[in-house]
Each structure stands twice: as structure tokens, then as C-alpha cells.
Amino acid sequence: MSVEKITEQKCCGGHVATYKHRSEVLGLDAKFAVFLPEAALQGAKVPVLYALAGLTCHQETFLTKANAVRFAARHGIALLTPDTSPRGAQVPGENDSCDLGTGAGFYLDATQSPWAEHYRMGTYISEELPALTEALLPLDGVRRGITGHSMGGHGALVHALRAPERWKSVSAFAPISNPSVVPWGQKAFSAYLGTDRARWAAWDATELLKAGHKHPSTILIDQGDADEFLTRELQPEHFEAAASQVGQALSMRRHAGYDHSYWFIQTIIEDHLAHHAQILKA
Amino acid sequence: MSVEKITEQKCCGGHVATYKHRSEVLGLDAKFAVFLPEAALQGAKVPVLYALAGLTCHQETFLTKANAVRFAARHGIALLTPDTSPRGAQVPGENDSCDLGTGAGFYLDATQSPWAEHYRMGTYISEELPALTEALLPLDGVRRGITGHSMGGHGALVHALRAPERWKSVSAFAPISNPSVVPWGQKAFSAYLGTDRARWAAWDATELLKAGHKHPSTILIDQGDADEFLTRELQPEHFEAAASQVGQALSMRRHAGYDHSYWFIQTIIEDHLAHHAQILKA
Image 1 (tube, chains in turn green, cyan):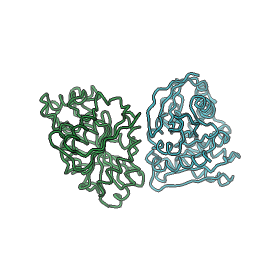
Image 2: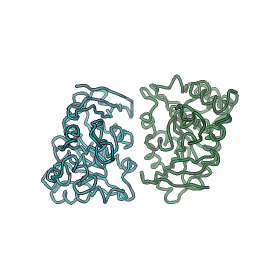
Image 3: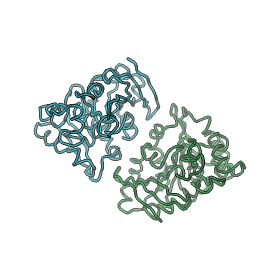
Image 4: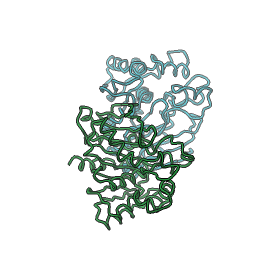
């Protein structure tokens, strides 16, 4: 296991650090960032909240822009922020658009050539990164939660529904809620998973609900009603309808005037940390 | 007066907006950003805190990274964040280094060719920007405060000491405290102000104190003791000694383990907004 700490800076009584490591799953070097609260620096095993960023972002975006650190510090929770895709896979065209390839890994395991070799963020997030970071840092894998924004909000929902035993709490900011039926999702799923839509359902949060996957906790979703991607790409009402249909506990809140940006996320971030703290520390 | 609103996004009940305008003082187009709290959107004139960023930054850096918006919203104070230098002055060499020229205007008025024509951030900050924004937006010029980081922390101290009647409250994060005696300051002052050091004193916070300038309020300064620029560039003890000598009220706090970054600023930002609110709203 080759892991290198690139940066470490004190923040809110704890440390924000960036790491680089060799990922066996991705077959490439990968980076992640982490906030460790003060208790973790003193050796206590702390709960950890994964935060998955959206299209075009990287491992530091959420930590820099979400204003989450002070609330993670208050609750004594670590934040773990992975990258949004493999980097340097050298797949032809991977840097040509913002919604496929670099920065757009969709937190799934590609099955189609030429993506399948490296674009395996699904297993990276669900298995390799927890194993690596919980061996390296004082993180309590029993108290692991997941959140995210947009593509990453969908990633959080999908991972929590696919493996509720791995993720004790879940929330999302303006998630792509039903990628199989919107342009961003159709483009990515066609490339990564092929044209057989039966395969798409395993990586689509709304379809997972319909297929009987549920999460034992209440899912918290916040959505701005002035979000420029609301109708075209996000479709939260699809997820809401499916949750209602199958009895998934869901707190879906809409916020007048807010758009898709981190200005919206920072407005409501305190509630998300409180949501995860309540479940992870119960 | 030509002013164009480029962006406007809801955040913490108010708006974050970016503006572009023709600056008569700079002789160039310039940008600034602003957070207006909810009361201002409803038409109330609110207090305004200017936040000056450091070397290499721009008008959005502080708003994005300092985590200040939620506290400004709480206190009902606007945040106004100017750029750190003129842009596009086309002075030979202005883009060659991070500590002179673009991104490094030092919030002063240059007197030396070829800088003097455009590098006039001193008058821009003290006169043009207040006049323009207080005509445009519901900002109360009687309740105007100033803060900043590094080069911008020094800018805040200098402007408050040069014109205490314009700036009712003042604070700084890790300011360059005595630029006349450190490399960053000597390089910039030599270029902008020439080799006659008598001219430097008018733009050096520590020298202003020594020359009898004072501010009627307590100045709040926070400084990390693991700041990588502490000894070479910042020299807070020079400002502290001068304040003590002339009886300037000063709260200088040192913080174990913190560096020069916005991770430090976000850790203590709440105290600065409270400091300004207490004075501006008294």
C-alpha cells in the first residue's frame, strides 16, 4: 500500500490533508482529501462522512467551497473527499467534454471498452478507499456516512442504496436523481455501461428504489428551485415518487431562489452535518 | 457611471453578486464582488465590510474561501470584495512574478513610471469604490469597516490608519505588517513608489502608527504561529510594538499550528465578523 501525504494544514482545531496513492482498482494514481477533527488527531476513532463532488470538480472542491469543515469539527466527524474520476487514464476523448471522462466518473464501474479498464470509481468508493483510509487514519468504518452534490449527490444515493450496510447515513445536494432518463446520465451510462438499459438500473438511484433497494435511515435531499439544471438533468420528483411508492423515508426540501452552486450548498450545509451526526453518533 | 452585474446568486438568504465597471481612477475595467444580506434586498441600508485579499487572489477569493457569508448574513452586514490589482494595464513585466503587478497592487497609489498610470488601488479602494457602490447598492457609508488577508490585511490596516473617518472598524488576518523592511514590501514599494523611503511611510501600517496615525477602535489581528511567511514577510511584532508605543488599542492573537492559508481564516472568521458587527452596529 503506497500512500503519500501531500499537504497537511490546521483548520478548525483539526487537519485538512491531501493524499496521493496508487489505486489497484483504478490502475492509476489517485488523490483524496480529508478533514480530521481534533479528537482524531488525539487518536480517537471518529465517524467519517464521504462527500462526493459533481462534474468538473476534484478532491478539494467540496472541502474548499462547502463550508463544511466548521460543522464537521463541531460534531467530531471526519470528512473524506475523493476525486470525481480517474486521472490520466488516456482514454481517447476523455478530456473532450465536461460530462464524460475526466471529472465525470459518475461513481460507477464501467463495463464497456475503452472505459472499463480504469473507470471503476464504483468499487474505488465502496471498497478500496474505505479499506485504505481506515487502515491509515483513525476512521470508524462502522460509522460511515455519504453525501454529495449533483453527480456526487447521485453517487451518494446510489452507493447508500446498493450497500446500506456500508453507509449508515445518506444525504444529497441537488442530485441527478434518475440519470437513465436525462441527457447527462444517458450520455455517461451509454459510454460506461453500454446500450443495454437493464444494466443502467443498477447504477440509477430511482431505479434502485423501484427494484426494492432501500436505506434504513431517512434520506435528506435539498434542492434549489432556481437550479438551472432542475428540469433537464436532476428530476428530483422521480426519486421522490419512487421513495413514496416503496416506503423509503425521505426528507426532500425545496428552497426558493437557490441555484445549483456551492452558494446554495454552504447555505444549508449545517443541516447536513447535523443529519449525519445524529445518525452516525446515535 | 457604467456598471454591469455579471452574476447574482442566492446565498444564506441574501445575494452574492459580481460586477464589472469602468474605473476612472484605474483607467481600466475592474471587477468587484459583494454579498448583500437579506435586509439589503428588502431595501434597508446595511453596514458594509470591505475584505481585501492577498497576493495572486481576485475579487472572488475571499467570498469563496473565507466562510464569511453565513456570519455576514447573521449580523446583517454586506461584504464587499475588490480585486487585488488593476487588470490589463499592459505594464511590461506585470505578469512576470506573483509579488509585483497583476494580483499584487498593494492597495496603494503608485507614483513611478510605468506603474503610476493604472496602479492606483489606493484611491480606488478609499474613494471610487465606496462612491460607486453606495450609489448603486443599499450600503451605509457611515458604517463601513475593512479587513483583509496578508497583502490585503496590510491594506486594511493602512487604509484605516490613513483615513479613520472612512473606516469605522478594522481587522486583519496575517497581515504584512511593516512592508518597508521585508522582501515583498521592498520589491513592491521600490517599483511603485521609487527609492525614496520617505514616501514608503505613507503606505506602511507600522510607519503610519509611528508617525502619529491612530484608529479610534480596537484593531483585531489574528496570526498563525506556523505561518510560513511569518518571519520573512509579516513581522507582526513590529506593528505590535508601534501600537504599544503610541497607545493604539490592539488585540493581537496568535494561534498555535495555523499557517497562512484560508484554512486558518475560516477557523477564526466568525470572530472577525462579530468584531466588525459590534463596532458598526453600535
